[in-house]
Length: 110
Image 1 (spheres, one colour):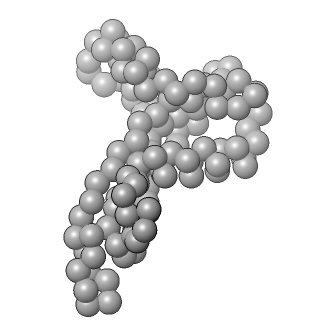
Image 2 (cartoon, one colour):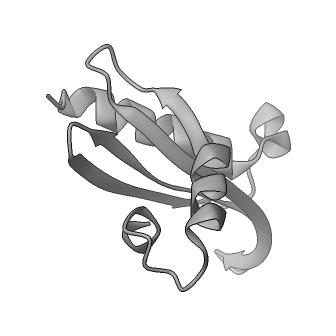
Image 3 (cartoon, one colour):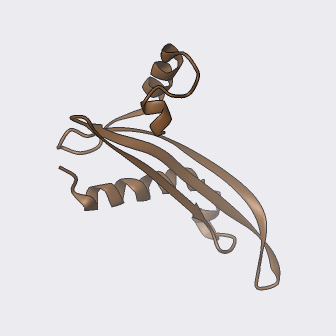
């Protein structure tokens, strides 16, 4: 994320600008922080207490920017065992994004 923000990826500035427009999520707080990021989700088999479980992986990668300040944020989560009920049908990426948003708000960045 830092290399993208600094245009240091070996691709055109236009490609980076387009990507940043696509991952712009809006103002995160009333203090004017611009929020950029992308979620991802997957499922995989793992062993838990001798039993094969189908667990979710989820992640959010992004950054916050305001007045020349930039903070890179990364959240990754993995279920310990197969989720049940309504959680079984949800993807991990949106949960990682929500967790990230909650943490950032608790930090009360200025």
